[in-house]
Length: 242
Image (tube, rainbow, N blue to C red):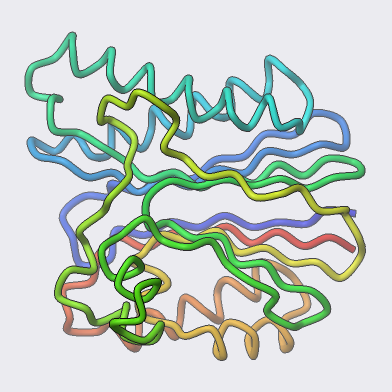
């Protein structure tokens, strides 16, 4: 059985450039989260396009396949670039995107940018996506520690996003895993994960009885830690397999 909850909040900003979405086809699901960036207030347009195209692609293909995952990223990229060509004020708009496809047997995910997917099994953190950012690159090079990403001065410098021409795909797809009871997934924008550490995510997961309770308890920590810090938009999607 699949249970889930989606949330998004503008934080201390004037508008919300994050977008979340989901779609169900029978016993297969698509979950999407995007964090838009760019001038002239077009960040929310880019993130909306990315989420809508992902959902549309899944609805058309109707299967949580690797082909569907790749096409979801590519169709969003194509639509954003087309919008940039049609609208001069949209030339700077870009977005991150993280997708989770839950099939009857296999689970797949992919991402671009610094919106993350965390994967838990039986209340234990198994892993997360690696940001396409300068600080993550510095971690890989051994120059800073993982925990220093959250407060790094270059944290918002992204190396890969949608809305920039690419000769080859810049998104990253994980190897599929089998769907089993006890799995939990968290998709979240940087405005969310910057204010809550992984230990707290896990502690909230162990105490929660539903994905909604899990996300709301984490969001409470996010708001408390980010109070008075000109908080960015923050969004999250929680998905449980039981």
